[in-house]
Image (cartoon, rainbow, N blue to C red):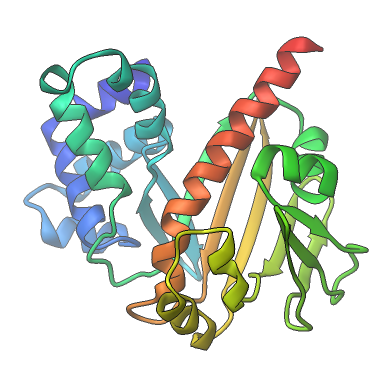
Length: 261
C-alpha cells in the first residue's frame, strides 16, 4: 500500500491516471502527445504506476496499451475510507469514484489486475471448480474443461446454459479463456437489472473473458480481461461493477483460507 500512496503523491503520475481514465488503452506515444512531458519522463512515471498496480498493460501487436487498474484504490477504500468520516476521506473517495467509474474511453476493454497471496493451483481451483468458484466468486462454472466444450453458469438459483457459452482456451494454472454467459430474462430475478437493460445486453455480440495467472514471489498475479464490447455496451457497464466485487471477494477469501492452513 505504501507504493500506491507514493505513486499517487506525484502530480505528473496523477495526470497520467487522469488521461488514462478519460481515454483508456493508450500507448506511450498517445500519452506523450496529450501531456507536456518528455517521453522518457512519461515512461518512468508509467513504470512507477505499473509497479504500484495502479495501471495494467496489454500488448496489441507491437503496441503496449495502458489501462487504469482500480484494485489498489479498492484496497485503500476498504482500509481507510470506512474508518473515517466523509470530510476527512473526501479526496480518496473522489479518486475511488473516478477510477471505478465509467470512463470516456475509446477502448472498451475491461482490464483488472490483482495480487493474491495464494498458489496458482489454489487460484485455478477457485476459478474452475464449481464448489470453490461459488464460494469465492459468487457463481459456479460447470464444464468438462476441454477446448471447444460448453459450460454452464450457476448463480444462486439461476442456471444459464447456451451452446455459445464456450471454453476457448484451457491451460491449467496459467490461462483460461471463455465466452461470457448469456443474458436471459430470468437474470432480473437475482439482480437489480431492468428487462430493458437485459434485452440490450442480449442483443450485443458475445464478449470474452480471459483469466491470466502468473507467479509473483509469494503471491500470484491475476489479470482478468473482459473484451469484445461494442460502443455504448450495456454488458460493459454491467460487468464494470460486477468483476471488481467478485475479484475482491476472491482475493479476501483465498487469503483468509490460506491463513488457516
